Length: 430
Image 1 (cartoon, rainbow, N blue to C red):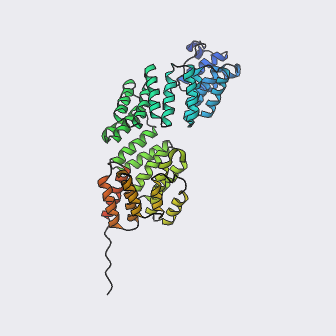
Image 2: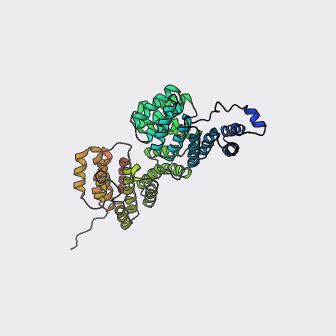
Image 3: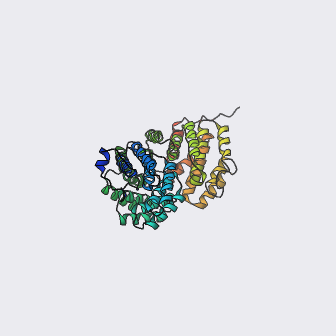
């Protein structure tokens, strides 16, 4: 994600840049200026050394705290950055950009409420700050306030059209299911910056939802050509490959994403499903456990529930039925029992029979019936009830959206069942 808080030389730090590079700095202002030059050349360690010296020479020179915070944030030291922004604000509480930068650091830590408070203050102090509106849009997006995010991105674009803001608005529109609007925004971002990898990835994700898998693959390829360490783009390309039926290749993409970003929980989620499709039960279970370890219930409730179900079926595929029961029982109280998906857990824990589950699903809607039938079919398959399993799974294949997890799981299990030799009927004894 590109940071909006670009370093600008403050008006009162008037130093000739070339001179600052060629001579030994003498004052806090000189060190600050050379630190800015080093920062802009991505020499973050050199910049930090200069900002440290500037502060040592003049502990009251607040600009050096602010820009040292920027340098620390660029190195991923968000706590150190926030400490520096705090000091800069203590020394000069009327400068809006420091609140913007602290809000950005808080956002990076996942403190969306703290980020919102800072960005509101930044906008109060400087109502014409496009970066503050864009950053607040990002924070609102993370809180699932998509309309609020779009409004903030609208304002940012009105003030200063940037690829970042168009791409951010595209993400918000995609989340709100405005697929055409999202495509238009990602196109706008690419027009402004043809090397903006995030816009290609965002457009590719929309194209996956539109089932334009070839177009999506081209976008993900471009994003990765621009940024070979873009973990989210590998994950997105994995989803596209999975939807194309390229399950081994999809797993390879998710594995690359995890290698780059070992805490990228959604990549474990996606890879767990793909292992389940291929009946690689132990691996499906291991990824489900990792996803549960990396996420919190208040952020990923239903996703976590489905990971428990995937882990449960993975263990059953691995013929570890006792461990499967213990696993699902251990998580039985982790979820809101009033949510419909919890009925799936009740069924798998033998607290209700299949007909009751299916009747409740039918009463809700067809999509819910699809989800119920695929797990009833999987359960029957693993119990050796071949014909009953095929009846449910074929119904899912005919009635589910393609591509979807339910469709892919049903087709994968049908393929295995049809390829396996039919059990030989037992002859009655004389």
